[in-house]
Length: 76
Image (cartoon, rainbow, N blue to C red):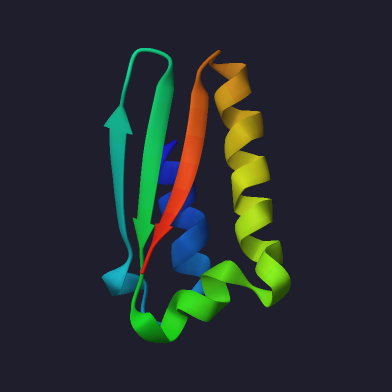
């Protein structure tokens, strides 16, 4: 899951070297934290949060396949 979000985020931003993804795993839930450069924050969130919502949808679909729950948090 971490690699999936990292790959998509690096394709979206202008500074891919500043993309940091950390994963905090629990028993049934993983929290994936995405941190990008301040300039790229708007690109990751998108207009009215559409890009962020799409990232969360992709993450949910991928995590359902492995029977785990995943939550994406975008860190400012």
